[in-house]
Image 1 (tube, rainbow, N blue to C red):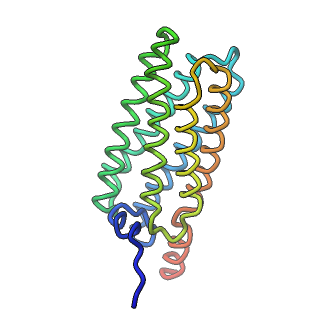
Image 2: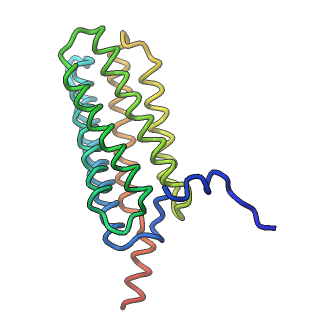
Image 3: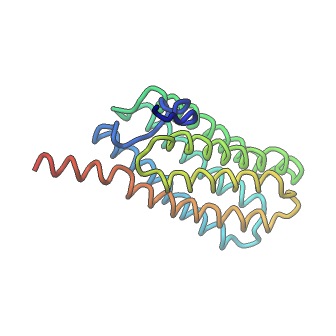
Length: 208
């Protein structure tokens, strides 16, 4: 009797497994992960040293992050060859949602504190949760998925914390978001270097 993985079966079409991807697709994924991770790391450092540490600063920085991450997801879903239809669809949907979240946060960055708390912070939290869920779905059958799962869980936790912490605790929210961006950025960069590395090495060895 063979054992089955119900969760794995559900997310089979959405799994981002390097073994099933072409070299160009692997390089595309690594580029998207690396650029998004580097942007998150840099913005997290900027936000951490931001004078005043206000919600406006948080909205500006995270608006930039979500737009960049969304564009990277859209590019991956539209232009990368060798990726399954499920992954393409997930990346395009997530890309659109992240770009919209970033734009909404930007448009409310200079609004009154109450408006910013209701809209900008809500979209920040929701954006992180969505990105985390999609990342976990993509890692369902990947041979090397530890960093992807770590990223997904951290992203979901960050989103939940941003949603449940009162917006009146502006300094805490900004510091937490800065640290979350730095951690997610580092994990994203590590994912970029480790994703598909064994597959590429095996391909190079076979063609040598």
